[in-house]
Image: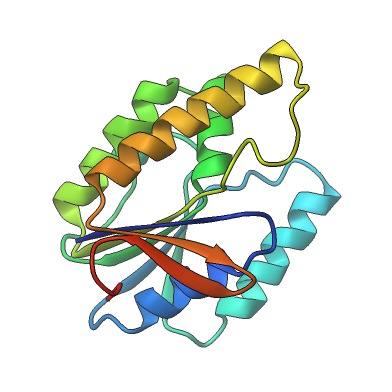
Length: 171
């Protein structure tokens, strides 16, 4: 099974995705994709670690190459977040581009019991972007569309409230 959770910044999408994963029996993996580039990133990473503390998640940090992630068969995986992963794959020297993102998701789906992916809704924040930013947003939008087409359930979270866009109620 595959659930895609989208929403704007600070919409509650991460909390919602986490609550879905916590309902599932079995091993839970939090697949973290944010690279600790600076102090702000380190603060955000530490905040997320505190929020997951004592919830039964094993954290796997993976910034690129999801296909090579050490995920045990049948595990329930929460991938946080597609926006970071896409930037890493597009701009990191280790990145494999947008196709590496999709190949990584496919590899996870072959191994996971359930995959929940958190991503950001894009293009509602403005209209004037430079070439590099516009390229990133277009690639993330393309990836989000492909993931939504493949997902069993798609939910958009607004103000902490999930709106199921595809499929039945999320697990």
